[in-house]
Image 1 (cartoon, rainbow, N blue to C red):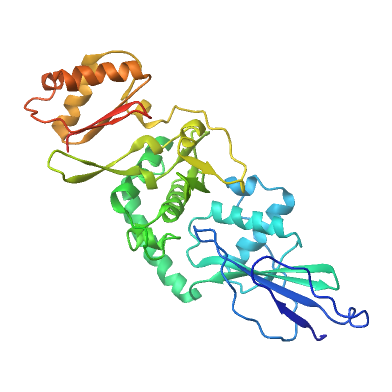
Image 2: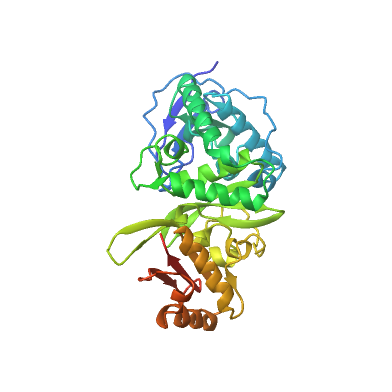
Length: 393
């Protein structure tokens, strides 16, 4: 084993230092950089590394287990190879491996795909990569996952998560329709998890299943994890929403793609007494691309489809999407929701129809003909989505 010159870099990678011509054949240069995959997208500093003898990173026998997963299938053959190597290392808790590439962009793309396809990797948070060069030639690339716990700690937490997920999914079957599975998971997360900006472990599913407090990344990871248990293809999408870093999902229902943002499924309103009550906002359960783009901007690290299907839109499936004036049908929907003490949202195909319903049921008070004993109307008018939500809870 030859001696080495070890150079530690923080921030953007620089070219390898050059030694004199006599030493080029005898020395290698190693540059390390730490990459954090937190929601903020900021890069974390690595600890200082001391000069030491270079140990060649070990190659790993990859496992090919991700066929059919969205991000994996949208990589080329070389990208899939690197993806497999990274995922195998993470699942086996390997400390470091030699990748079958020296292309940094391909490495980053493959890792982003792994994170998109696997929302359950709660024991890893980013990675450190190391470049090995001879002179100016890049000869190998090392990948080292940044583990947040030991294998034993991981095993214990995984058992806890498995037990909770088994209970959470007890109300749905693998034999239910794709729509029913998606709605169940969407409602499950809205009702059981609180959005807390500074929640602990918020970038992984520990925050959702064990601590019940998370942020968008935790929601998106949990959606992917739960839908996978139910046989629904789902991938985590990253980008921005209203200008802030955000994560949501692309899901496949009955062969068609939709976007789901479980974070935005939580909503609230203030009734006449000023009390805030939470309810589920179904606008973000199965969105088209056009609807998703009203508030979300995905980044460019993944090829995304044009989503145009509406068959599994919540309002269409639940019969509360109105395309013509039919006060008796609308009244019957309101009457049922009133009797059950729940929120119901009517979505309209155009603004004219929405205004007509608003005038008839609210301004003129004809809602009283369908909701016996009602004395106060709590409602939310949403002009962007052309909706009126009646809050009977």
